[in-house]
Image 1 (cartoon, helix red, strand yellow):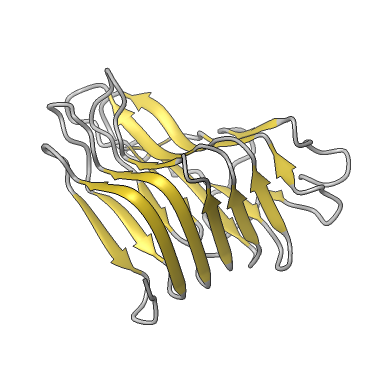
Image 2 (cartoon, rainbow, N blue to C red):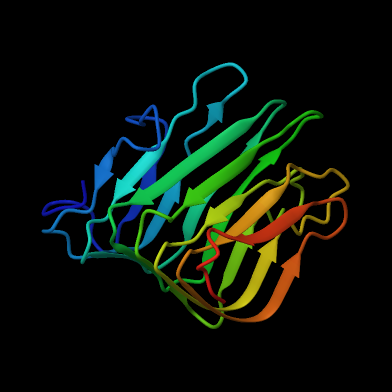
Amino acid sequence: NTGAGGPTALDSVIFGDTGTSADSNTVNNVVDAGFAGTVANLTYNSASATSSSAPVFNVTQIPSGQTLTVAGNLLVGGLNEGAGAYITYAYLTGGGALEVTGTNVFVENYGSAAGANATAYLDLSGLSDFIFNNTNAELSIADTTSGLTRAGGNLNLASVSNFIDVATINLATSSSAQAGPNSLLTLGAGTNIIYVSNFNIANDKNSADVTVAAPSGGL
């Protein structure tokens, strides 16, 4: 838990396979009232080989009225797995807010073998607000870096209000010859304000969709 005695603004917080939940409704870490509110970096990198085992989830509760601020990078996934459906699940819930002021948000896993179907999920729909405000920053969903292939990523934005002001959004923009699974950016059911200089979607063999969680969602 991120309460008194928990991480400081200089700490990088990592949620891996240890202590995960069996479903997306069971909270396994909480932003407590005594927490100062900021961490340096935040990583979720559990891996579920769903074809051979039950999925595992990291579920962060940010209570209503509280904000978790990430001053550096937010990473969900970042794993390069073999054949099979290796999935990283990160769910944020509780009705609070997530703010990223650093330079990168990454939501992506990769596959190193034929038949790989790796992907990552960041679900913010249980929060009221998401803010990513850095005009030099990049939002990367299934954007394969050099030497990695078969990227997959999915991002669900917050339910009430989203404010994104970044330089670049890359969605399923791998330049490799091997495509990953379909990737998805789901806008929230409330207000979605997005300022971006370059919005790149689904180049080469990759596929992706941009959708809205409900008809009430505005852009």
